Amino acid sequence: MTETLLGLKRRARRMARELAATHPDAHCELDHSSPLELAVATLLSAQTTDVRVNETTPKLFARYPTAADYAAADRAELEGLLKPLGFFRAKSDALMKLGQALVDLHAGVVPNTMEALVALPGIGRKTANVILGNAFDVPGLTVDTHFQRLVTRFGWTTETDPVKIEVAVAGLIEKRDWTMFSHRVIFHGRRVCHARKPACGACTITRSCPSYGLGPKDPAVAAKLLKGPRVAELARAAGAPVPEGATSEEGASEEPAL
Ligand code: SF4
Image (cartoon, rainbow, N blue to C red; front, side):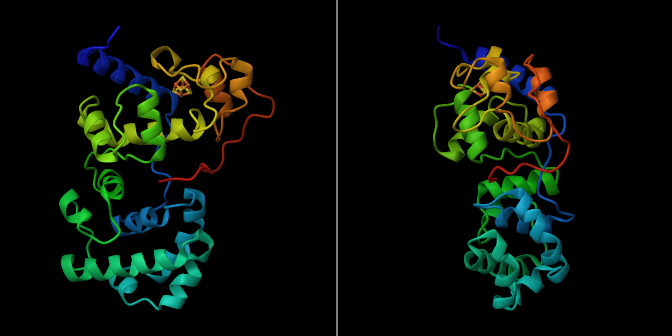
């Protein structure tokens, strides 16, 4: 039976509530204490993990506390600091350009509107939404690879363009919930609904998910696929057996981030 828009909206909001209950620890996993630090960390998170970024940024933030410091950075020194992250030449270049643009256009201050953010070099809608939502409390949907995969599996949209996905999901979820909803979906993607083998039999939203069965349905098999620091809680919440040796409360996800 075809789902009506109202039916879809109700289902989407029910799933959003279930995800909130499943991932009470969902948050921005990039360490930061200012909009500039978050902008830098988000930019660096391409093609690497949040954990790696968080290992690199304390030194970086101490060495370059302002946008002007990035603009005036010694390229070789900056590249040396960013080397562990991969793509360090491109990332150094991006930070220097971003620092210069912030100095030239915004007196060194990170702006708090989508329009101004996406006009900056290296900042796309995804990064802008991360900054708006987490540094300025302006609701934003972060359409990263996890988000894109999950809302497609949820049957919420058939769009493949991230901006169109953002618009589709914006029509289903209340605006005030966008930022936290994004974190919860990303947590679910990192810990439960993996790209290759989703842990369907140990998932808390199977009842509402049309893709249930994409991964193993057997709860014992699926529970072994759960990842992250809350495997035991996730398994229990889904009514699956807790795998032997689960788990440890430390550390952010090792899955590639944005
Ligand atoms: S039921 Fe399976 S496909 Fe659906 S959200 Fe859960 S893990 Fe992902």
